[in-house]
Amino acid sequence: MRILFVCTGNICRSPTADAVARQRIAAAGLDWHVDSAGTGGWHVGEAPDDRAVAAGAARGYDLSELQAREVDPADFIRFDHVIAMDRSHQRFLRRMPGADRGARVSLMMAWAGEPDGDVPDPYYGGEDGFDAVLDMIERAVDGLIARLGTAQSSG
Image 1 (cartoon, rainbow, N blue to C red):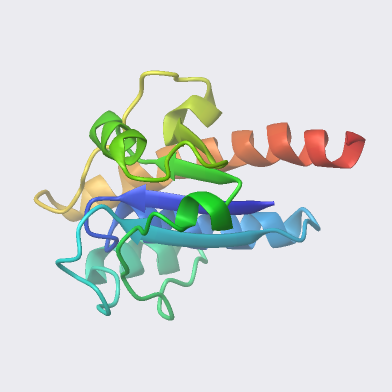
Image 2: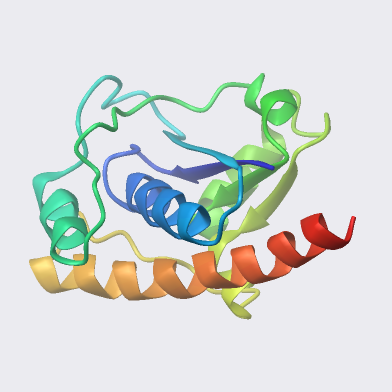
């Protein structure tokens, strides 16, 4: 299974989802590839936001090695699932060239049973926003593993 998480600049939400998923997928004993990207290239090559790194570290997630990158049309071939943090990202992804090539585009919170839920951008808020985002992402990643892990083991 190959999963790509996407947010705006790839410095807050999607690298957080990347780190949470890596750790929880490994704990579940699954051999999946995970990555993250942004809809824009403003932060390409940069590390995640310090507040995202700190919030993740407080819960045992390591974001320190991640670097921002921009989503690429080839990602729709390289990944089985491209997961958007909010509905604006989902619309952007569905309009990209190659979006019809294979990867399933979905909304992050749909994996937590919230089909229209957005993971809010914590960038312009306080540190508590990063904790709230972590809560949401943990629920969604658990749902993702429960659904796709079961499908993979039965397939």
